[in-house]
Image 1 (spheres, rainbow, N blue to C red):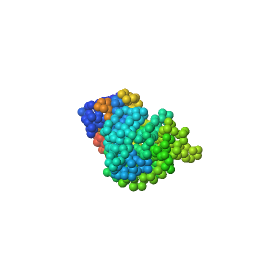
Image 2 (image 1 turned 90 degrees about the vertical axis):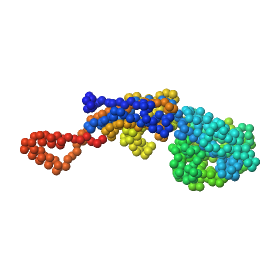
Image 3 (image 1 turned 45 degrees about the vertical axis):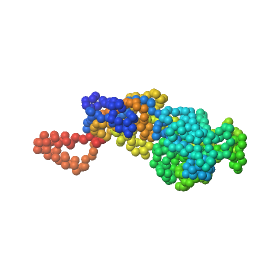
Image 4 (image 1 turned 180 degrees about the vertical axis):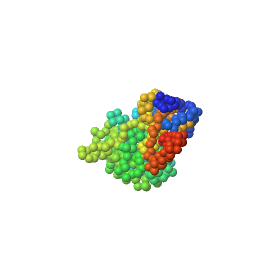
Length: 479
């Protein structure tokens, strides 16, 4: 029916990323660019334009763990009572606490390979006291020297188990077999890691300042999703909470464990600023000064034999039983190593007034389409015409001369296809705009009738015809 265009016809715009003008800050990325149209798409006044995604093909070469997106790990090592520095035995410098901060290598991990990588990195540090086989973002070695301080290395190890039934990690810290340490240990995983690893906004202790950091840690993928690992009922404004686990070779009351099992504690809190010998939050929320234990998820002593698996107790995220019947709330979410890349989002400069996005407060977004990633690594993510043309957007434009394109993950970070280009096509449907009849004021209608009668009576047929055409011409609404 297209007689330019009255019209059921469509126009298709095929776009290849290699033909665009790269506008990304990192020119190695192919997922942000501008396309200039030598022949603009012009929409006639009596038509409205509908836009839909026609086809898309993206190579599944991007990683589920990516630099500065979700690869950060920061771990702090303390005494079980939350002390360190001069009052403890882990570090000789009162203003330093042993910590390890690094990014995991970019790549595609599953639950088992992620577990193995975390264990390898952290336990290598605990065993040697140093981080020398990779480049951390920050590190304070366990071996600090001076004052005849004993070398506190090779005594403890982190253990993790992936429970295939619950799809969750289980965590523990224990002494290394064959050792009998006189120390205890608290290991704190910080889930506020930002793009500047090892820093907290110039050591500011106000927890509200954390919102200035984009969380780039691995917490979402390893089971610490905010909707479960969140305790707003306690009145804290800063989240997500850090996770700690501790081990002591001495039972409560000071009795040595000997060859029996040790004592394990687990909990959550906020580690913020180094104040003297302790990591203390002077703003008044969770601290690491002993009062922290009043806010633990679970503090379990002298575990029974039924709770011990091969002399190693793994914390499964269960809180203290409460309610009737007794129930243990579990604070860990399932492992989701594809959390940030389970969907990808196509953004264009044409769609700024057509889509609402809850992630930004249900304001208008430039998202054209959300594409589920349902293929394994090495495959191709595809949208066929039957998939894409279901949702059509009405555009508020009269001419299209250029197009800005972005392809992002859940947190609006550009996808890195590792240098490969990708393609998609847009479908433009022209529809005849509906006439908008506006009621005229009664006085104007009366005056027009009088004028038309005057022209008819005086025989001014040409003037009358011109007047009637102008009166009956309905302008296209401004869409």
